[in-house]
Image (cartoon, rainbow, N blue to C red; front, side, top):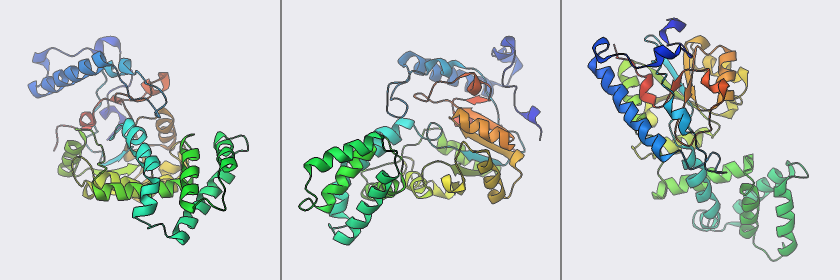
Length: 328
């Protein structure tokens, strides 16, 4: 395998045009035509749902980029991000986070039965989350304001937990105690059927292709391994957990840290240069490339953060099926 197996990341303009039909197999031509139809629809409607649920992001221009890399024939290790790659960013920020925020009280009542010791443990963890924030952090100010109207002597522990969760989540805080509680609420939601993990329609076909070709697929996400397994175990395509060789989260290191990818390669038992890593985040791909990842690939989905020149310097896919080769 060599880097030449992947197409150049920035070919001359004339090479980006689709060759005449008589110069390529009809099956490939159909794939390109199907992709063109998809991209036309995405461009005409615009990309919405927002990045980090902050604003409506329009990255439609990125969806017209016409670079189509193929997984090198002898590359047998695929490492995938979740948000903006296998799953819509909007699912996490528009479905999971609001579900956790609005179901705190229900979880404490239905699952914990209001048991005081368990509730106090959760509250103590949330208090520690707040104490670790900068003094000027808006969540601190919101908690202070809530305390001014709450009488802790008469307010239940459950109500205090709700107040802390609202203050932390309103300002998009990612903290240990909060994430632990969110994971428990999501687990209950998945178990009840109220939640179904979103995956793109091309993801399961990719997994089937990789299984048939002996390509190992692993997940690397900032979400906990437990949350990853919940999402894929209760997805809108069924339980997909059996397809994955390994799961990695920030316990292996931050995704923007170069060292993390070396650790993952070691855990997978493969040379780092033989890994294909697909992500929607430019900083993650830069770190992966610096770590020696042989095939860093940019994922573009409607609603992802618009690319800069840095992102355009990587091979680009609009569908995970573009990674699939012709097979053995």
